[in-house]
Amino acid sequence: MDTGILIIIIVLSVVVFIDLLFFILASVCNGIAFGKRGDKNPLLKYFTAEDFNLTTQPVTVEGEGGALRGYIYTSASVQDNGKLIVFCHGMGPGHIAYTTEIAYFCNCGYTVLAVDNYGCNLSDGKNIRGMYSGALSTIRVIDFARTDERLKDKPLYLVGHSWGGYSALCASAERKVDKVVAISAPSVPSNVIWQYLAKIMPKPIAAFISYFVTITYCFKFKGKGNTNAAKCASANGVPTLLIQGDKDEVVGKSVAAYYEANGGNITKHLAEGKAHNPYNTVAAEEKLAELQTALINSPKMSEGEKYRFFDGFDFKAATEEDEEVMKVISDFLN
Image (cartoon, rainbow, N blue to C red; front, top):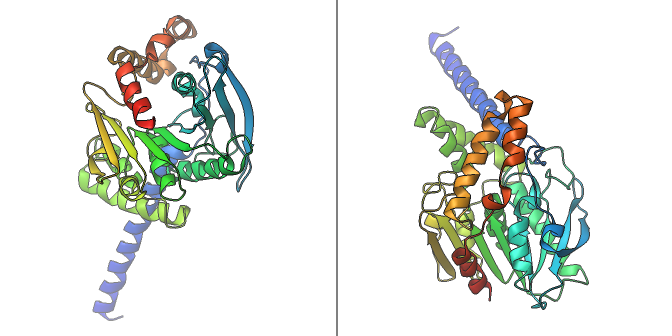
């Protein structure tokens, strides 16, 4: 065989091998982030509607891949203001991790429709699939609300945190809504993967992997898996509020929609001294950080140590809301 042809074959074989390797690494990274369900952690306490004297009506949103489930929340103690909030939850066990926030909006007179994303808590699905899956779930919930007799005539606002913020922004570019609030929202899924990988490996390798993550997401979600939420915020044509903590390391400056999005429809609020949950007080965020550390270390704890820490943990203090930030949101929606 001619030497030149042999060299070409070897080079192409190496390129194919490297591409295959990075595709595998990209799939592994996506699997680590989204390849499991988001269900309740038995070590944690989750507040319920009963804790806040809210009334609930169960809802089921049928669709491709299985049903999405959640509740319509209202407060009987305040007058209904005639407006609907579709609440978009972040990573974790679905909307039940945000009952304090849901109660706040109900007590402001809103009806809140909170449905778990595909692969989370009450909803069907073997795993979460990917970040854009949250946007698809939100679109399904919007379509449900626009046809449900109880909800269809109400102005519809999207409110979301973290993954939910991303979901809300992307969905607002696909469906007509009245206003959007996105808190600590990432902008581009593959960039989020890069942010985490760059902390544990050389940045060029992290960049290669995130590039192949982009390709993987395109196949998984028919070209929309790496949708830029910041661009959706700028192009959705409706009033959009972006809130970001200036000390957020979960969705940092390089990947947050807050810093990238621009447009006449966009209002921004930077919560100084806040991390990833800027709607909470600084003290509550510190308690959450303490809780997160304990969860990471829990496999090393004895059953007695787990009981003493988690049973004695002040979950109410860890969910204390920052009245100023919540008022920024309510004022914007009003």
